[in-house]
Amino acid sequence: MSAPTESKSVHAAPYATAPSGVARRPGLTHAVLALAAVCAFVLAFVFAATAEAADGSAGVNGGSGVVITPKVKAAKCLRSCARKKGVRGGSLIKLTGVDMRAVHTVLFLGSRGAADDTKSAVVKARRTWVIVRVPADSATGPVVALGANGARSKANFILPVLPAPPVIGSPDLQPVSGVALPPGVTLETGTSTPRVVFLGAKQLVRFSLRVNGADATAIVNLIRQSSGEVAGSWTVPAANGQIVSVDWDGKIAGQEAPSGRYVFTTSVNAGQATTAASPTPRVSNADLRNAFDLYGYMFPVRGTHNFGQYAAKFGGGRGHQGQDVMASCGTKLVAARGGVVIESRFHSRAGNFIVIRPEGGGDMAYMHMVTKSPFKPGDEVYTGQTIGNVGQTGRASGCHLHFERWTGEIWRSKPFDPLPDLLAWDQVS
Image (tube, rainbow, N blue to C red; front, side, top):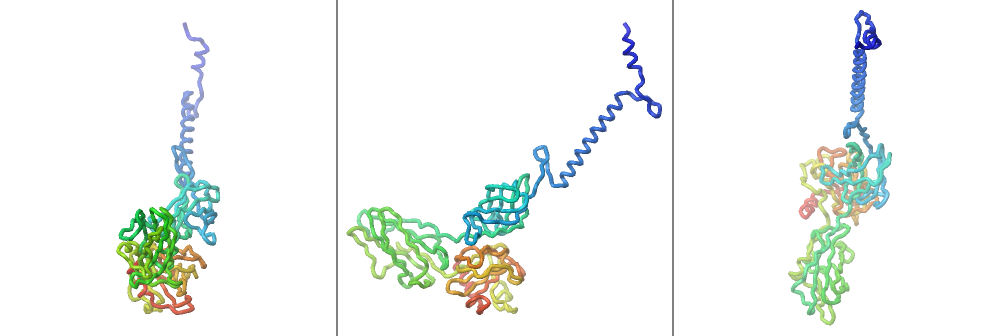
């Protein structure tokens, strides 16, 4: 049977005639239009991807994500602050800036090198600020905010962090032999570390003891070994099994003790039995493990150093008022002697500098530091406490500390050559 006439007429009907007179098949035009649409979509995607790349975006997990770079502008201490709202290890701070909402971690870069770098997770974040706690061992230096998709702020905001004063180690108690004690009674003693200590430190030295087997009274004497002089004496109750301690501040009758080796000695009164202290206590071999050395000053540059050539010395052919100590930029600087900060700022010649006035006067200046010291005028600084880092700011060629000592107030008295003192301090610290 033949196909229906209607079907034949559909297939036989012409579709269109091209200007050239060539007939087109009905499906060809549809294919061309579809291909053109696909090409347009691909081109649009390529152009969009190119624009995103130029604008700083990146593909994330098969899609695309915009990288928003945070910028840190300022810092404010909120809790656990130092004097005058200064920032220190353990402080809770607010960092303000731009595009901070996605910041999840803050890096505290400290001085040069990675040895003192620390980091802390953000506690709370908003568009213009984040709250973060400063790690305990952080140091002054740049802070960097880390955000989503690898975003990282520039390290151009310097956060001053007040360093903690050096702390003494807890005494390690050891049994004492060769000391007359009542039957059943034992004695343990120990002295804090380090065993080289410096006047002007926040904590100098601690002696601890424990009497086991009876309640007792302990008599502790501190002896200057070279002369036998009693530098300090304490009578302390010592309950059975309890640790008791005495601290020495480095003074004898209110005056600074001379440098030298000192030794703690102990005697114990327990019940009727007595091992009383003699009027002039003697130092036994057993006591010597509780000895320590006392000095007045600590060498300020805590790294490899030298004292340079003629131009680095006091006078130096150009009115040089101090001594240069050559060291790598970033080397830690500490206070040679504790005292009160008189000045802490930038000067075109001295660069970033700080002046500290020890108890009794005689100002000390530390110049050309990498950044301004975190300490402000009026702050108290302790011997051995970090005050900055060696640099070459101001009028300086090469990294070094320019160190000055004055007979009284700086710029109102006279400077004197500090090299003999520096050489002596360098030998002991």
